[in-house]
Image 1 (cartoon, helix red, strand yellow):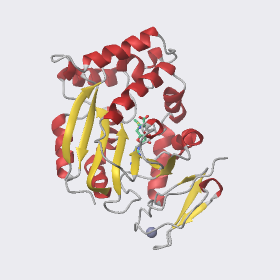
Image 2: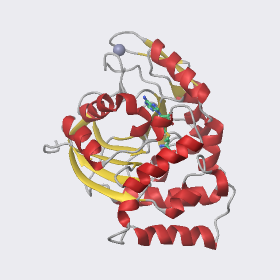
Image 3: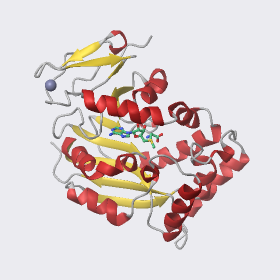
Length: 311
Ligand SMILES: C[S@@+](CC[C@H](N)C(=O)[O-])C[C@H]1O[C@@H](n2cnc3c(N)ncnc32)[C@H](O)[C@@H]1O
Ligand SMILES: [Zn+2]
C-alpha cells in the first residue's frame, strides 16, 4: 500500500495549532493537536478534521446524497470523464503563471482538479466534508494528492498559509453559508495567492429559466445547492472577502448538458469516448468564442487574487 504523510501545514481546525506528525496515514488511527490536545480520527487513511457536531451533520447530509452514483459519473462514464479533462484543462491553464508552494483543492469530491494538475507542486491537499466520497478516490490520488475530510467553513490551515486554491463546482454547494466560506478561503490565502474556480453560471435569463424549470420537473433535495451565481453575486462575495476578481468567463454549453453533467442528466451516462463526444467538446470550445452566444455558458471560469506582494 502507498505510504503518504500528512503535510505539516495541515493544522488543527479548532486552534490552528500543529498536529502531531503522521508519517503514514494509512496505518494511523488518529492525530492529536499539539496545542489544544483535541484528537481527530483517521478513517481509512483520511484524517477527519471536523468537530463532533459538524461530523454528525455531514454524515446526515452525505446519507441523502448518491455518493457512489456521483463517483461513478466521474469515473465510469467515459464521455463525462473526457468532458472533465477538457474542463479542468481549461481551468488549469488559467492559473496565473508563477511559482506555487502550497496548493489545496476544496469541495474536492474525487479531487477532479488536483488529480489532473500534473505541473503543480505536490502534495496537494484535497478537502471535502464527505468522507465516503474522498475514500472512493483515495487509492487513485495518493501520494500526490492527500485527501482530508474537513469543512470549508473551518479550514485546517493558518492565516495566509496557502498559495493556490482550486475549486471545481463547490461554492454553490455551500450556498447557504457561502459568504463565510469565501471569507474563510481568503483568510488562508497568502498575499498574492490565487483562487481558480468553476461554478454554475446564472447570468443569462435562459440559463436561469431553464434551471428553474428543470428542478421544478425533477425535484431533488436541496435544489438551491444546484443554482448558479451571477457575476454580480460572485463579484460581491469575492470583494467582501477582500479578493480581486480577475476573470469571470462563460464556459460549458451543449456538450456539457449532454455529456458533462451525467450525474444530473443521465441520458448519455454510458457513452464511450467517440466522434460524437469529441465533436460536442469541439463545439463547446468554439462556442466560448462566439460573441453573441458565449454568454449562454452553464458555468463560469473564475480567477481571483488576494492583493499584496508574495513573500
Ligand atoms: C458538486 S460536488 C463537486 C465535487 C468535485 N469538485 C467534482 O467536480 O466532482 C460538491 C462537493 O462539495 C462538498 N461539500 C459540501 N459542503 C462542504 C463543506 N462545508 N466543506 C467541504 N466540502 C463540502 C460535497 O461533499 C461535494 O463533494
Ligand atoms: Zn487544536
